[in-house]
Length: 139
Ligand SMILES: Nc1ncnc2c1ncn2[C@@H]1O[C@H](COP(=O)(O)OP(=O)(O)OP(=O)(O)O)[C@@H](O)[C@H]1O
Ligand SMILES: [Mg+2]
Image (tube, helix red, strand yellow):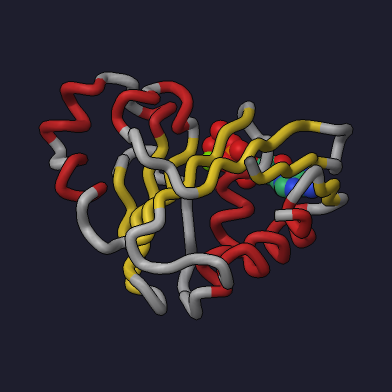
């Protein structure tokens, strides 16, 4: 989709706004992979997505919780594979049930355990393009 291809944002606010725009495409059951280095803007983008889904509270990285749940316009699950790379642990946490639910699932660092999520609906790549510039590309 052209609107989300090779977009350069120049601030966190712009990245959030792109996320809000992107949220309009989403429906329950969609799985979104967010791929890119540390501080590339994945969590910032997710904040914008949740804003677009009418979530009014704080959104933070699931660093210790591993799985964050938000009751937004739709239920949204936020996961970060960087915090736990062991596939067995994710299965213990009921990952397969989550994937098969009708939540919107947003996975940061999805490329670290590709076997866990076979059917990705949207893959978003994030890259540093300078101090406050990030390139975001929907594949
Ligand atoms: N254009 C931009 N878009 C997004 N973030 C930006 C931008 N410019 C600067 N930043 C800064 O970069 C950082 C992005 O952090 P964020 O938590 O979104 O990254 P992340 O990709 O989720 O990293 P991690 O892999 O550690 O979870 C923030 O400190 C933010 O202020
Ligand atoms: Mg993050």
